[in-house]
Length: 383
Image (cartoon, rainbow, N blue to C red; front, side):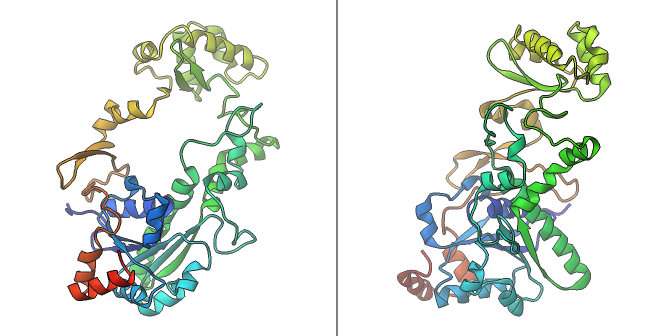
């Protein structure tokens, strides 16, 4: 078993900020890659240095608009395998660190750009955030109550799934291709493109029925009682996902409503069945339903709050919520690694470093002297 992970020996230079790029590079770092995050000091003022996606990394402050800063970047580039950036299209060209430029220095580089709408197309210059990518891709239209405005999810789905995760997939594919061809390549990740792939099931049903999916009114979103959410006696909620008939049958038998077993997807009866289940579930608390349903094969689950998730026996057992001790001895609760490899497992090694905390050590590694570093600091090249 490799001690450090499947990506030990891979070096990543991460020029991105906020969530999509740093989330991607965190996954790579979790699995052994050396990740050096590079940011200009002016981003400190934005207060968006998200520590929960910066573990297992090093961090250097660097002004790429200065000749000295660019020289430092290209020295790092000589031994790098991957570059990640999340600027608007055209910015890296103006900075002189775009793919066409860096591949002249390092032909094997895998260069990944993450943007809202991609490097081509009519939206190439349009700004946006997660909610906009969800909107344009058709996802937001399907979230929320049918008689209310679309509901914005409480997590950044497009940033993480459409951007960060797809970036990791693209980088790993490009690294595999480089093993075969010896050549690096450019990766164009559009978060909106990534979200479009989430419409596979709605598209399937649309092609089957010729009907457009409606918010909270389709087979897998509140239309039927077997796939729905229900309030409990204490104002909490649970979910039912009894899609297959055998699960629905068992639930009906347990709730003593056998008359609904064969009416699972009957449109004439669906509101009656939903109302019946709403009434039944309101008679007991969520904890009581936990005891009563237990491990019954009906596909059900608690709708849990963040504090419940962080103390959940499931996630503790799965090492998905772990305590990580810092250099000062203080422990921080961090989220674990969902991709579990048997021979080369990922590992949460270090807490997030402070902004620019690795600057001096990395510069010394590149051969710069204390005098050089002081001069860089005086000129504002680094913090």
